[in-house]
Image (cartoon, rainbow, N blue to C red; front, side):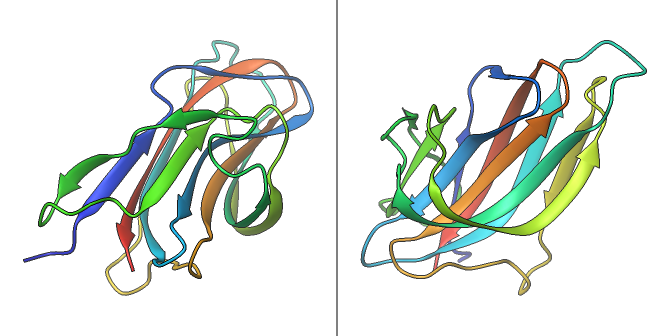
Length: 156
């Protein structure tokens, strides 16, 4: 049986302010477990074809400050597949004060004009985290736009 996979989603539009980095979604493993980042999606609702691209960063985060639920809205992860087990992690969205310590592990520029990225890590290449740490999606838009995101994770 495959390992359980859980999804966390923003569940609605997250507003980005011009030229301001914002963590839109994040996972934090519990103290006795780690996480594998299985996949992520990011999409924008912009309508201007000439809009400057948004910097989308997939990040490793120690959650030294502002863990999910602190200066963010808690998200309830939903199990997608695998044996039914307790998730072993917490998730949050739309931080009002950025978490620390963040290390970028992937970055891309994406058009805010209806731009969409969907990425599934191939089996065996998923980033994993230390106990009690996790992952986040951070976006920096040159102009105001809304974003939605999702991340799939498994216990490690």
